[in-house]
Amino acid sequence: MRQGKPNQFVRAFVQLTGFIPTRIFLRPKVYYINKESQGKKLPKPCILMSNHKSLMDFVLYMNMYPFRTLRFLIAEVMFNKGKMFAKFLFSIGGIFVNRDTRDFSFVAESLKVLDNGGTVGIFPESRLPVDGKPWPFKPSVVFIALRTDAPIVPMYTDGAYSLKKRTRVMIGEKIYLRDYCADENPSPEEIMRLTKILEDKTFALGEELKKRVEKENGKK
Image 1 (cartoon, one colour):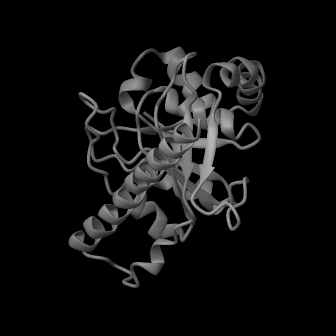
Image 2: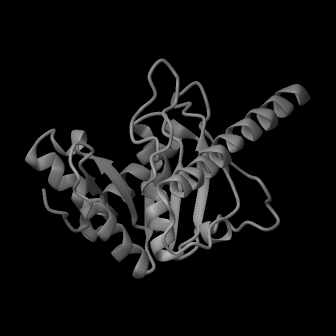
């Protein structure tokens, strides 16, 4: 399947009509590792990297950044739900990823977006958790970050998508992967080491989020 192009009219319509209902349903509460040094706006360009709890994760981040075109990597299983739905996913900015083949067109598309100052969203687990257990990170985010030197903005969502609960998100400080790797052609072992660093940093945000929520509840 060829990569499609976002349709700004469709994206804007979805964002506009879905913003208030989604905001009421999610009621997202955002935390920052270092609020003094972190701005609320995403840098340009950047890679938004997050854990993956639910298909609602896409909706959450689109709602948090309504004025940015987030180009999320989306697996083939979603595009295979029908031609019209595939067209819709492309229209709102989806980047097609086929996990069953060695098709790396998603990398080229991601590099193009970042080179033009855009935002690429990546869930490095590549799939939803099973029985609540997350998957190890895939290295795609490392390849893309090293090729562009774009900063990675790590995020962690608790996945609490319910009218009875607030969705909480912890946002970490920007990560420049070149700070951890000076090699222009890193070995497979080095790629896996960098991938593990990103995985650990992401789930560390989850631990910090848990502590802050427990502290808040203790005050009540």
